[in-house]
Image 1: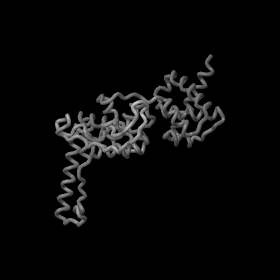
Image 2 (image 1 turned 90 degrees about the horizontal axis):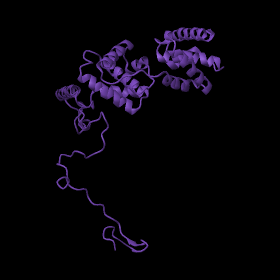
Image 3 (image 1 turned 90 degrees about the vertical axis):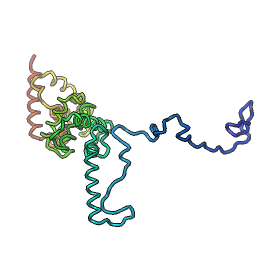
Image 4 (image 1 turned 180 degrees about the vertical axis):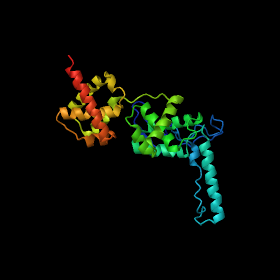
Length: 288
């Protein structure tokens, strides 16, 4: 007889003859636990950027707890309390962005861009540190959010252009670019350029290009990186032009409108860039 398992079994082979249902023991009380009774360490895991303050009450301002409509005086009081709550939460810059408008905007814009959770959390951390240092003072919320999202994308080598991020946050490209330069100069997070191969993998998948075209573009990229005249071009614009030329060479022609739509550049820019690349490539091939 095993008193711990409440069952009868054979001592030699372990065969159970009679078993009874076990009753789960209740959890220890706080005074019996080794903690100080503060409740720390209890509850589910909280992801970075989250907070338990988000579990508080939500002031609707139109009806009470029993569903009865409120008078105009009580509605005004609730609206005032709601404004004060949002203001105080947004001023708590040293804590997480749990109920602030910035965290909501970052999550929604990151969802439009199809970013993974780790990139969104990096954007929240970058926004919090930049706001603590006062880098976003005097700038609009969409441009600040766009700058942090673009910095997080470049931090994790996610191929997203500045124009795509600006469109997702609903701000002008110039405003987001200026805010990003402030974040970059402030040294909030290490920001490196996204490699051209990251854009190549994304555009090739969306355009359904074969492996032969991808290999041709990679070979052309190696030659283009050594040319000083192509060093000032944007990575996504250069990759788009190389894809357009490589697809024609391999008999998998894609229209200029298709490539421009996928790469988020204008057809005029694509045409001028492809002509420049074709001229330089032809000069390189003819030089003995």
